[in-house]
Length: 311
Image (cartoon, rainbow, N blue to C red; front, side):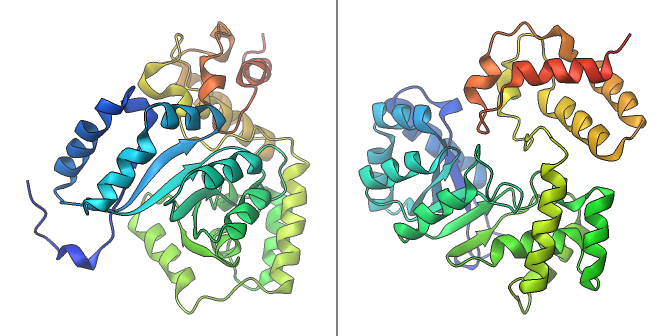
Protein backbone atom coordinates (compact mmCIF):
# COMPACT_ATOMS: atom_id res chain seq x y z
CA UNK A 1 0.00 0.00 0.00
CA UNK A 2 1.22 3.51 -0.75
CA UNK A 3 -0.13 6.98 -0.09
CA UNK A 4 -0.12 8.90 -3.38
CA UNK A 5 -2.81 11.54 -2.92
CA UNK A 6 -0.42 14.10 -1.45
CA UNK A 7 3.32 14.61 -1.46
CA UNK A 8 4.60 13.12 1.80
CA UNK A 9 6.59 16.20 2.79
CA UNK A 10 3.45 18.37 2.63
CA UNK A 11 1.76 16.94 5.71
CA UNK A 12 2.66 15.66 9.17
CA UNK A 13 1.36 12.31 10.40
CA UNK A 14 1.35 11.23 14.04
CA UNK A 15 0.78 7.79 15.50
CA UNK A 16 1.17 6.33 18.95
CA UNK A 17 2.46 3.27 20.75
CA UNK A 18 -0.32 2.14 23.06
CA UNK A 19 0.14 -0.37 25.86
CA UNK A 20 -3.19 -1.96 24.96
CA UNK A 21 -1.50 -3.59 21.97
CA UNK A 22 1.81 -4.97 23.23
CA UNK A 23 3.04 -6.93 26.23
CA UNK A 24 6.75 -7.40 25.56
CA UNK A 25 9.57 -5.76 23.62
CA UNK A 26 9.28 -8.23 20.75
CA UNK A 27 5.70 -7.06 20.08
CA UNK A 28 6.61 -3.44 19.37
CA UNK A 29 8.25 -3.57 15.94
CA UNK A 30 5.56 -5.82 14.39
CA UNK A 31 2.92 -3.43 15.75
CA UNK A 32 4.82 -0.43 14.36
CA UNK A 33 5.12 -2.08 10.94
CA UNK A 34 1.37 -2.73 10.88
CA UNK A 35 0.78 0.95 11.67
CA UNK A 36 2.96 2.03 8.76
CA UNK A 37 1.23 -0.43 6.45
CA UNK A 38 -2.25 0.67 7.53
CA UNK A 39 -1.45 4.34 6.88
CA UNK A 40 0.50 3.77 3.67
CA UNK A 41 3.61 5.71 4.65
CA UNK A 42 7.29 4.95 5.24
CA UNK A 43 7.70 7.01 8.42
CA UNK A 44 5.75 8.93 11.05
CA UNK A 45 6.56 12.57 11.71
CA UNK A 46 5.67 12.16 15.38
CA UNK A 47 5.42 8.93 17.35
CA UNK A 48 4.03 9.15 20.87
CA UNK A 49 4.54 6.69 23.69
CA UNK A 50 0.94 6.95 24.70
CA UNK A 51 -1.16 7.56 27.84
CA UNK A 52 1.63 7.54 30.38
CA UNK A 53 1.07 7.56 34.08
CA UNK A 54 3.24 6.13 36.85
CA UNK A 55 2.08 2.56 36.26
CA UNK A 56 2.15 2.57 32.47
CA UNK A 57 5.56 4.23 32.49
CA UNK A 58 6.89 1.21 34.36
CA UNK A 59 5.59 -1.02 31.56
CA UNK A 60 7.33 1.13 28.96
CA UNK A 61 10.58 0.75 30.90
CA UNK A 62 10.11 -2.99 31.45
CA UNK A 63 9.59 -3.58 27.73
CA UNK A 64 12.42 -1.23 26.67
CA UNK A 65 9.90 0.74 24.61
CA UNK A 66 11.89 3.97 24.79
CA UNK A 67 15.01 2.26 23.43
CA UNK A 68 13.00 0.68 20.62
CA UNK A 69 11.47 4.00 19.58
CA UNK A 70 14.81 5.80 19.80
CA UNK A 71 16.21 3.16 17.44
CA UNK A 72 13.29 3.76 15.06
CA UNK A 73 14.24 7.43 15.01
CA UNK A 74 17.88 6.64 14.27
CA UNK A 75 16.70 4.58 11.30
CA UNK A 76 14.52 7.43 9.99
CA UNK A 77 11.24 5.63 10.53
CA UNK A 78 10.22 8.19 13.17
CA UNK A 79 11.13 11.87 12.85
CA UNK A 80 10.22 13.04 16.35
CA UNK A 81 9.59 11.19 19.62
CA UNK A 82 6.92 12.33 22.04
CA UNK A 83 4.76 11.15 24.91
CA UNK A 84 1.14 11.69 25.85
CA UNK A 85 0.65 12.07 29.55
CA UNK A 86 -2.11 11.51 32.15
CA UNK A 87 -0.77 11.89 35.67
CA UNK A 88 0.61 14.34 38.21
CA UNK A 89 3.44 16.79 37.59
CA UNK A 90 5.99 14.89 39.65
CA UNK A 91 5.53 11.79 37.48
CA UNK A 92 6.14 13.79 34.31
CA UNK A 93 9.26 15.29 35.85
CA UNK A 94 10.53 11.80 36.64
CA UNK A 95 9.98 10.66 33.05
CA UNK A 96 11.69 13.70 31.54
CA UNK A 97 14.60 13.26 33.94
CA UNK A 98 15.05 9.60 33.10
CA UNK A 99 14.40 9.49 29.36
CA UNK A 100 16.49 11.19 26.70
CA UNK A 101 15.10 12.15 23.33
CA UNK A 102 11.56 13.22 24.23
CA UNK A 103 10.87 16.12 21.89
CA UNK A 104 7.23 16.94 22.57
CA UNK A 105 4.69 16.26 25.34
CA UNK A 106 0.95 15.96 24.86
CA UNK A 107 -1.04 16.98 27.93
CA UNK A 108 -4.62 17.61 28.95
CA UNK A 109 -5.06 21.37 29.15
CA UNK A 110 -8.19 23.50 29.42
CA UNK A 111 -9.46 26.24 31.67
CA UNK A 112 -11.59 23.94 33.84
CA UNK A 113 -8.67 21.57 34.54
CA UNK A 114 -6.04 24.30 34.84
CA UNK A 115 -6.09 24.40 38.65
CA UNK A 116 -7.84 21.07 39.18
CA UNK A 117 -6.00 19.04 41.83
CA UNK A 118 -6.77 15.73 40.10
CA UNK A 119 -5.48 16.79 36.67
CA UNK A 120 -2.85 19.40 37.59
CA UNK A 121 -2.89 20.95 34.13
CA UNK A 122 -1.00 24.04 35.21
CA UNK A 123 1.65 22.11 37.15
CA UNK A 124 2.15 19.61 34.32
CA UNK A 125 2.43 22.45 31.81
CA UNK A 126 5.03 24.14 34.03
CA UNK A 127 7.13 20.96 34.03
CA UNK A 128 7.02 20.98 30.22
CA UNK A 129 8.26 24.57 30.25
CA UNK A 130 10.96 23.77 32.79
CA UNK A 131 12.37 21.10 30.47
CA UNK A 132 11.74 23.21 27.35
CA UNK A 133 9.39 20.67 25.79
CA UNK A 134 6.86 21.91 23.20
CA UNK A 135 3.31 21.08 24.26
CA UNK A 136 0.55 19.41 22.28
CA UNK A 137 -2.79 20.17 23.91
CA UNK A 138 -5.49 17.54 24.17
CA UNK A 139 -8.96 18.11 25.58
CA UNK A 140 -8.98 21.91 25.06
CA UNK A 141 -12.79 21.79 25.08
CA UNK A 142 -12.93 18.93 27.61
CA UNK A 143 -14.74 16.37 25.50
CA UNK A 144 -17.12 19.03 24.17
CA UNK A 145 -18.20 20.21 27.63
CA UNK A 146 -16.77 23.69 27.10
CA UNK A 147 -18.74 24.22 23.89
CA UNK A 148 -22.09 23.62 25.57
CA UNK A 149 -22.06 25.88 28.59
CA UNK A 150 -24.63 26.11 31.39
CA UNK A 151 -26.92 29.11 31.44
CA UNK A 152 -24.95 31.14 33.96
CA UNK A 153 -21.75 30.61 31.99
CA UNK A 154 -23.46 31.68 28.77
CA UNK A 155 -24.46 34.91 30.50
CA UNK A 156 -20.76 35.61 31.06
CA UNK A 157 -19.91 34.63 27.49
CA UNK A 158 -22.53 37.01 26.10
CA UNK A 159 -20.48 39.97 27.34
CA UNK A 160 -17.60 39.16 24.98
CA UNK A 161 -18.97 40.65 21.76
CA UNK A 162 -19.49 37.55 19.62
CA UNK A 163 -16.77 35.28 20.99
CA UNK A 164 -18.33 31.83 21.19
CA UNK A 165 -17.60 29.01 23.63
CA UNK A 166 -15.31 26.98 21.34
CA UNK A 167 -13.37 30.12 20.39
CA UNK A 168 -12.77 30.98 24.04
CA UNK A 169 -11.69 27.46 25.03
CA UNK A 170 -9.32 26.84 22.14
CA UNK A 171 -7.75 30.29 22.30
CA UNK A 172 -7.28 29.89 26.06
CA UNK A 173 -5.16 26.78 25.48
CA UNK A 174 -3.26 28.41 22.60
CA UNK A 175 -2.53 31.58 24.58
CA UNK A 176 0.22 30.02 26.68
CA UNK A 177 3.89 30.05 25.70
CA UNK A 178 5.29 26.83 24.30
CA UNK A 179 2.04 25.51 22.85
CA UNK A 180 3.07 23.66 19.70
CA UNK A 181 -0.38 22.43 18.71
CA UNK A 182 -3.95 22.43 20.02
CA UNK A 183 -5.96 19.32 19.18
CA UNK A 184 -9.72 19.62 19.19
CA UNK A 185 -12.08 16.78 18.35
CA UNK A 186 -14.34 17.64 15.43
CA UNK A 187 -17.27 15.77 13.90
CA UNK A 188 -18.18 17.97 10.94
CA UNK A 189 -16.59 20.14 8.27
CA UNK A 190 -18.25 23.21 9.76
CA UNK A 191 -16.60 22.54 13.12
CA UNK A 192 -13.24 22.09 11.44
CA UNK A 193 -13.58 25.34 9.49
CA UNK A 194 -14.66 27.16 12.66
CA UNK A 195 -11.73 25.84 14.69
CA UNK A 196 -9.23 26.70 11.96
CA UNK A 197 -10.67 30.21 11.82
CA UNK A 198 -9.76 30.81 15.46
CA UNK A 199 -6.09 30.40 14.59
CA UNK A 200 -6.01 32.76 11.62
CA UNK A 201 -4.52 36.06 12.75
CA UNK A 202 -4.40 34.45 16.18
CA UNK A 203 -4.73 36.68 19.22
CA UNK A 204 -4.17 35.58 22.78
CA UNK A 205 -7.03 36.07 25.21
CA UNK A 206 -7.04 39.61 26.50
CA UNK A 207 -7.57 40.63 30.11
CA UNK A 208 -11.34 40.87 29.72
CA UNK A 209 -11.57 37.42 28.16
CA UNK A 210 -9.35 35.92 30.85
CA UNK A 211 -11.61 37.44 33.48
CA UNK A 212 -14.60 35.81 31.75
CA UNK A 213 -12.78 32.46 31.78
CA UNK A 214 -12.37 32.77 35.54
CA UNK A 215 -16.07 33.48 36.02
CA UNK A 216 -17.12 30.57 33.76
CA UNK A 217 -14.70 28.31 35.58
CA UNK A 218 -16.36 29.18 38.86
CA UNK A 219 -19.73 28.22 37.39
CA UNK A 220 -18.44 24.78 36.43
CA UNK A 221 -16.72 24.17 39.73
CA UNK A 222 -19.95 24.92 41.53
CA UNK A 223 -21.77 22.25 39.53
CA UNK A 224 -19.89 19.30 41.07
CA UNK A 225 -19.62 17.55 37.71
CA UNK A 226 -18.07 14.14 37.08
CA UNK A 227 -14.76 15.06 35.43
CA UNK A 228 -14.84 12.42 32.70
CA UNK A 229 -13.33 13.38 29.32
CA UNK A 230 -14.90 10.44 27.43
CA UNK A 231 -11.56 8.89 26.42
CA UNK A 232 -13.26 5.45 26.64
CA UNK A 233 -10.15 3.75 28.00
CA UNK A 234 -12.39 2.15 30.65
CA UNK A 235 -14.46 0.40 27.98
CA UNK A 236 -11.79 -0.50 25.42
CA UNK A 237 -11.70 -4.18 24.40
CA UNK A 238 -14.92 -4.77 26.36
CA UNK A 239 -12.99 -4.70 29.63
CA UNK A 240 -16.12 -4.03 31.68
CA UNK A 241 -17.67 -7.41 32.61
CA UNK A 242 -21.14 -5.82 32.60
CA UNK A 243 -20.58 -3.87 29.34
CA UNK A 244 -21.46 -0.62 31.11
CA UNK A 245 -20.93 2.36 28.80
CA UNK A 246 -19.33 4.40 31.56
CA UNK A 247 -18.43 7.65 29.70
CA UNK A 248 -21.88 7.84 28.11
CA UNK A 249 -23.63 7.37 31.46
CA UNK A 250 -21.40 10.00 33.08
CA UNK A 251 -22.20 12.38 30.21
CA UNK A 252 -25.92 11.86 30.81
CA UNK A 253 -25.43 12.55 34.50
CA UNK A 254 -23.43 15.72 33.88
CA UNK A 255 -25.87 17.07 31.33
CA UNK A 256 -28.80 16.46 33.60
CA UNK A 257 -27.02 18.19 36.48
CA UNK A 258 -26.01 21.15 34.30
CA UNK A 259 -29.13 21.64 32.22
CA UNK A 260 -31.78 19.90 34.35
CA UNK A 261 -32.78 18.20 31.12
CA UNK A 262 -35.60 15.67 31.40
CA UNK A 263 -34.64 13.97 28.14
CA UNK A 264 -31.41 12.66 29.65
CA UNK A 265 -33.57 9.95 31.22
CA UNK A 266 -34.51 8.94 27.70
CA UNK A 267 -30.89 8.86 26.60
CA UNK A 268 -29.97 6.87 29.69
CA UNK A 269 -32.54 4.23 28.78
CA UNK A 270 -31.34 4.20 25.18
CA UNK A 271 -27.70 3.72 26.21
CA UNK A 272 -28.46 0.99 28.73
CA UNK A 273 -30.59 -0.89 26.21
CA UNK A 274 -27.35 -2.06 24.59
CA UNK A 275 -25.15 -2.02 27.70
CA UNK A 276 -25.27 -2.49 31.42
CA UNK A 277 -27.04 -0.15 33.79
CA UNK A 278 -25.03 1.75 36.38
CA UNK A 279 -26.62 -0.41 39.09
CA UNK A 280 -25.20 -3.54 37.47
CA UNK A 281 -21.60 -2.62 38.34
CA UNK A 282 -19.96 -5.53 40.18
CA UNK A 283 -17.20 -3.25 41.54
CA UNK A 284 -14.34 -5.24 40.04
CA UNK A 285 -12.30 -2.04 39.66
CA UNK A 286 -10.93 -2.71 36.15
CA UNK A 287 -12.19 0.66 34.96
CA UNK A 288 -10.47 2.59 37.76
CA UNK A 289 -7.10 0.98 37.06
CA UNK A 290 -7.05 2.35 33.51
CA UNK A 291 -8.81 5.71 34.00
CA UNK A 292 -6.44 8.59 33.07
CA UNK A 293 -8.44 10.92 35.31
CA UNK A 294 -8.14 8.56 38.30
CA UNK A 295 -11.87 8.82 38.92
CA UNK A 296 -13.56 6.74 41.65
CA UNK A 297 -15.77 5.20 38.97
CA UNK A 298 -17.45 2.63 41.21
CA UNK A 299 -18.65 5.31 43.61
CA UNK A 300 -19.71 7.60 40.78
CA UNK A 301 -21.79 4.84 39.20
CA UNK A 302 -23.70 4.71 42.48
CA UNK A 303 -24.51 8.41 42.03
CA UNK A 304 -25.66 7.73 38.47
CA UNK A 305 -27.84 4.90 39.74
CA UNK A 306 -29.52 7.19 42.26
CA UNK A 307 -30.18 9.80 39.59
CA UNK A 308 -31.55 7.61 36.82
CA UNK A 309 -32.84 4.44 38.44
CA UNK A 310 -35.18 5.94 41.00
CA UNK A 311 -38.17 3.74 41.76
